Image (cartoon, rainbow, N blue to C red; front, side, top):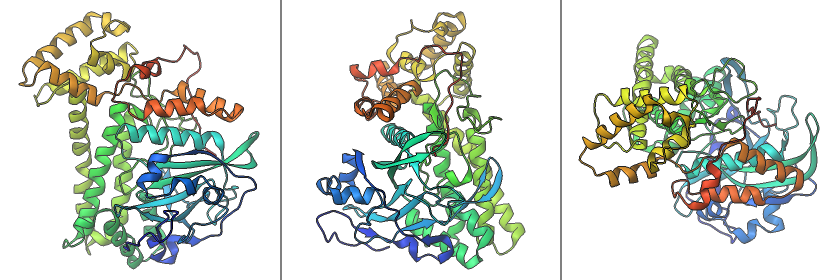
Length: 491
């Protein structure tokens, strides 16, 4: 990896290390200019952390970069090739509507991909126009920044521009481009692509690159590829536990949407759960509930098994031994995930230490929440602040019996009640991006070009553990509806 000094006042300090991989992993592409780009939102704090000059980014030249009308200095635009299991079926994919401008080297010497999403056709577009509409790009901005505020590893959104051009879907919609920032866009699907269509030498080159970029501390090990598998499993076990702890439902956990870095990626049909129900599905295309909330840990293990399969030639020269190694590592996922999740739920209940009966206490509460249609986030919020008067659940004898056992559990630990309360405040967000609040913001933004509702929502979501008075309104539930909430893949 190269550390290049900033040589201009714009702050762009790009490297293109991915382009030094074998050519089959990417295609060099030309930018696809648009007619009248307009900057809708710029993430000032993210821009500053990347070492970018905000004044320049807001100028016509900076906006032209976000629109794909010009490349920043040092950029070598490419589209990345990958494959993936989509709803369990393997297919060849690639960045069909995204262009990687390069890798920004920050003042702290960190490396982040800078990618334009919705920037036009690439060799992987598969008959698509490569464009994106405004609503889904705003949605990704809101949800990804909410995830960042919640402390969950995620790709982030640097900027959104409108293009001045219409995109034809079911109707004519305003075109938009989102600038996405990621530790990298290397996916399980990238390794599946390598396993299916490359040589072992190419696969090794990809694995070596990934290790150097994300796990340099294992580079000198006798067999770093086993450790690579272990590290990816650990990060995904931690990530999925964090999703479950806040009620986040990804919606499309295909293998091409699982990153090797352990960041959440692709915010198409995702949403946050209101009432607790493990069977909750929001995605309009997930008709069988493959990616339901309660299935996410199992699907993560399935995806990681596909990753392990790609590494078999590198794990051991003998295939049988390689399979044994892979199976052993994958078998650890559920234990790692469960440990992360149990630790997180204990914190949400103010519990510092471990007791053998904790799982029963936790499962009993969740079962009661499911039985009485209790809101997931607000139940834990009510327990945190002892406001047990606003849900049907709290009036039941079953809950009162549970509450007594919970209080007895807290009394058995050395930490004070004040300490438990603080732990719960730090572990239970005051708000999540409620689906009806997100839709409200998107509606006025797209239809009226009014972004103030979104800006207020983003401000509230930026510090979800602050428990500020002005955040209280965002914890209210949506009005009753006979129709289930549905989300759609952004196109």
